[in-house]
Length: 509
Image 1 (cartoon, rainbow, N blue to C red):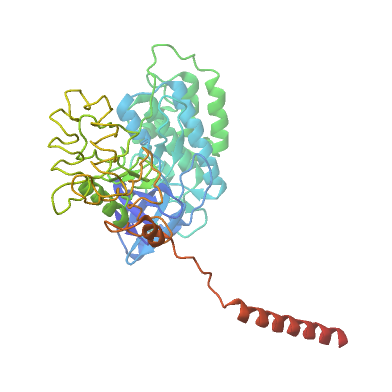
Image 2 (spheres, rainbow, N blue to C red):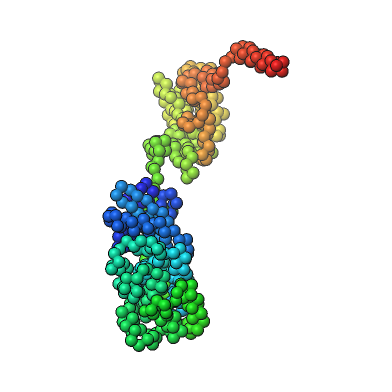
């Protein structure tokens, strides 16, 4: 980021340099837009006085680029103006050379329109030249010209800041009367406008001294090569050495230019199309069309912690919208070939081992009687040679679903002792919560760290009863804050009596 000036302007990059300061592209934090900031490099009294004069100039015209605001910071001062990025007329001549006559008349009309507004404020510019006439980057469209740099401009009648025998301005664009020490006046600006127009149409800087000498010895010279005669008559009146023979006002010169356009030949297809492109260049890194690019803060602690937990456990993930969603349950360890599986089934955790090593039956099997994982015999899941059982049952030996006897998971009966060993089977574990493939979280889920309400109560210990588990999981009733009813009601009655007495007293009075 650039230097912050006076807490408002952020200097980005230099785009030009003048006689008393450098011009920067800057960001105006108050107006939220890019501006051109002219930073004063010298701090002597003479330069400061010129700076005060320039920044005090306020001319609102589409073809005038005047200061808009100013600021001071320690020993530095600056003023700002609109950012014009199409370069100057000097850049345009350097890119294309001589310009078409009709294009020159269009630029000359806009320049005289802006100069009319300047002269209407009683201000003499005194430094009109191609480098001080800027262009908007309009591409191949209609050009838009703006007169800038009022560093040595002054109002008529104001005291001069230079000695009488000194001339302020750019050599080559002085009017003859300025060299003789005359007071600045509007015709001097019109003389410089005529020289700028000659520069545009010929592509070379005119010889002001040679023109003055030719006028003095031979009168009005012939039109230079490439300059149409009607246009030359107007330009010759602008660059006449005698100020009395020139146009007296910019408005009169502008009317003559508009009338000349009607006499010029039509544009031909051979004429080169003039394009005014961007001369400043793109914004540096860290800046966008809407201002400085502020880096967004990283994820907060909550988000970062949730992301870390997801990577570690695999049970919690973040959706594209930022909500939490649960991963599908992992398949059961004890599922065999005959155990169904799929997204719609719930996996039951394996039962805890008992001291003798059997899970729910007599032998060393997990859920049956024999040595096989789920049955009695040597078959995959049953006793006999059938795929799933011994006697035609789905998954067991007799008529039970998964075992040898009549119990659901073992050899004995559910209510009595096992038929072979007399041991009591373990109660079935509580069903696991079913998960949906969405972001919804069930109230009974164990992973709900951001759900309001009472904390979840762990399930009953192994061997407990369902009644105890339900009693332990019952939430504590919520009690609203405030005094009990036996206190609140008498206080309310006393308050109503006080209000009634007050109303009665007001009515009685």
